[in-house]
Amino acid sequence: MALAEQQTIGVVTDSTVLDVTPAAVSIIKSLLEQREIPEHALRVFVTGGGCSGLQYGMAFQEAPEAGDTVVDCADVRLLVDPTSMMYLRGATIDYVDSLIGGGFRIDNPNAVSNCGCGHSFKGSDEGAADQSEGCGTCGSY
Image 1 (tube, rainbow, N blue to C red):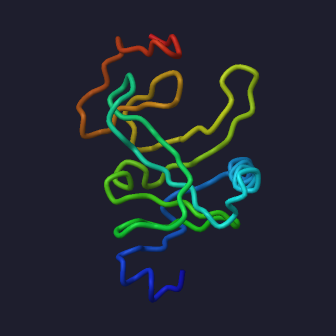
Image 2 (cartoon, rainbow, N blue to C red):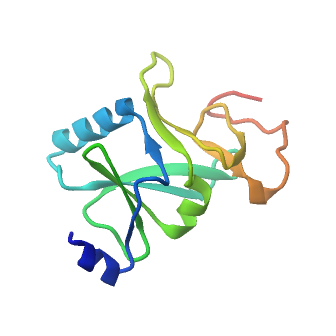
């Protein structure tokens, strides 16, 4: 999409708001090829839920929506909506290959606490972390 078109729908291109490790880029590229959607982007978002109050989500999408920030990183594009950007700015997306619990991991400097599974977190605007919370999925307490 041309820059002029992006500006008319309110899309901002900024490659500095998120960092994506080479391992994560490689997996994203591979998934796009496997699914035969090489021109799609990876939408990264935050939604309510999870054991810590907020959880991360990812999905492939063909084009950005109005208000999205587009992050271009090593031949892959990420799409982030304005609300999610408040929580994700400065985060690093990595891919960890592990026998128990491999997958995408987000190192988020905006999280005041994380669940042991790495899929949910508590943001700074949600108050102090409650150390007694745990996740039935990951078993951390």
